[in-house]
Length: 469
Ligand code: ARG
Image 1 (cartoon, rainbow, N blue to C red):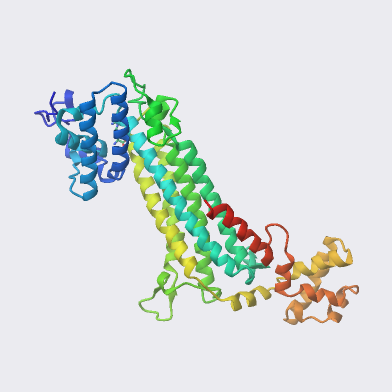
Image 2 (cartoon, rainbow, N blue to C red):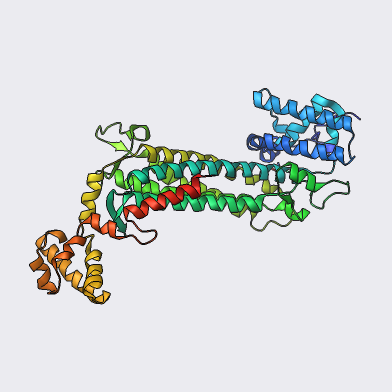
């Protein structure tokens, strides 16, 4: 048996019943090699596992198996050293690898595709690829958490305004604010881990759609490729891409988190806020306005969430309404996943870099925290706690005190005891204890609250939970 290219222009891989070859346009729309070449390592790994199993099961001979395995290693080496010639007429990574294998080892190569199809092959390759992408992204997010935790620790007691409606609401600490993102990123990692568990079943051996009559051992190939088990249904194995969708959904949600932090950096670096300054490494200048330092990296992280959300949408729409089992539509599953992976990698790294380099203007933050009657809630709480007033009444009394300060154009702490007593006669001097922003944050010791010691405890717990593996 020889691996001979047929006389006609038809495909060497599937052209047995074809006379003519595909038109140039057909080749262009059909070929995926320009992007699915990124699956080469997974493709070869999957083929080696399949080959070993075929030998062990007696489906192909030892010599053929050995020739295939060493040939696949040679192909891998060629691809990694850049000498491999990718051919469009061979459509995709699977046929490019197999055709080169045939050139290298001859007839034995033709036995590799026994008891499998490109349908289970690509589903296996892609699961392996997405699993690696999940692991890579998890590592990057862990690094981002480490950056956030370090900065949170430095600023566990740095007072800043906390906002609702982007209006100063109550003072918080900058460390507490950063820790909010440690939580978000932790859930992003959790989503990846959840999706990874469901992804981790092996399609190999499902063959084209119905399974195979050869005595294969799917449990063996699944284990060799690091899967927990083989997929339980051959039709499902080759035709669902929910593992890619779950990955993209996790990416999209993470991108939304990053974009919110990016937006805050954009706002905080503005001349009107000046809470933080980005390092030169993560800032650009304007070509005509010398005074400007633009937060381009943050803006681009904010923008690129759009792409990642688009990638999720793209694949959802590709998959919607496809009948079982495989359809060629599914070849279009890869580009959105590749794009989202690359985009996320860049955005997570950029965010970690910005956070690590960030210069914090604690003075500005503190001044802003004191403005806007941010400790009004503390007065109301004091009236409840010390005078035993019902909260609704305390809220009303405090509102009148705020109005008095507003009328006078001063802060709450600038009012005299007499001023306060003119509103509520039973107020005592002790109320001044809660008027300062430091005291305000220090009093919020409830679990998950903003008191510096509470934040420090949260940082310690988060380090244990997220950074110790
Ligand atoms: N390049 C194809 C893909 O990515 C491989 C599977 C082709 N299967 C087929 N029946 N034509 O989906």
